[in-house]
Length: 432
Image (cartoon, rainbow, N blue to C red):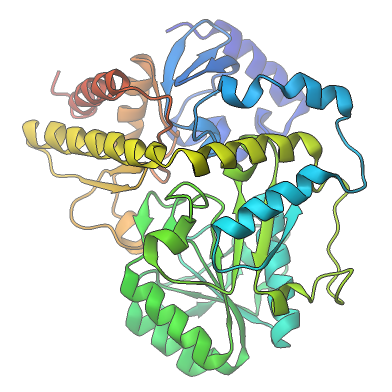
């Protein structure tokens, strides 16, 4: 595998960009490699500057439901650019996509566009605090909600703790009202509400965690969360930045049948362009300026290019429900193939699959929370990753992410990937 151009670009990048990358996981540090630099992508394939081709299971970390540069999305983009790339005042396409999101997501009445998932979650929590006139929030171990100060926290022992800063630069006073509890633990959740329920402004949760590998909430966990939030007057926020319009067209509400009070979106509603959004019940969203007192603004919010791409993406997903059926079928085939390869090699690892998301965990037993994930053998994953990359398969360069499938992935892609994974598992265990 050639890498001279990528290596040169990386050496140039580190002179001008912290770590040479604009988001940490892109550095490939966790797998002991230098990053690859991409030249172009189409369909299920991505090509680096050295001419190497990969079947891509990162898919820009989720938004590319239709694959890279699908003609259905890009064919008229020049006309949109000719009309202007940013206005700073309203345009019709903002109304069109807001209407699409609200109609598709039965739990919300109104939605505000922002520019990233981090901005969406940060803003939703501010609104929830104002609406309830409370300060404390609850999040769960292993769930990532962006890099705003109040959410960059960890718990120390796997039990209920107040958050302590995960990153330098986050004052302890900022996270003192952030409580961290255990994912999928009903008793833990009951205890949190018994102690803090009257002071909890909001609970924020990934219904399917994506940043500790793919782990689904149980329906019982979400139902209890919903019941307790209703009982205590706490705002329930579903972080749908990954799951929104990926699990199905009704997102987590359609998948689990449980309604939050607010929801945060990103990725797919921009089809790969920078975008985010948060929405909620009308009484909650009426807190947002200029209707209400909660200030939140953004010069590029509702950018016409992002709104155009997102609108077309959502319309295609709405009008072609078979996309979701086919994506789940391919993801199940991939997960089944991985399990078969593991069994054939006499190994014992866990594969989780939810909708079009798949993770192979290098550990045994069921994977339901952060403690379970921490049992993974990351050194084995690193060998597995390197072998896949050399075979032209690109997955996230960390054990703690999922594989994202797109409509562009073919059955042949899946079959070839399973064969490559079989070889990579052999290589990781020196069984070649």
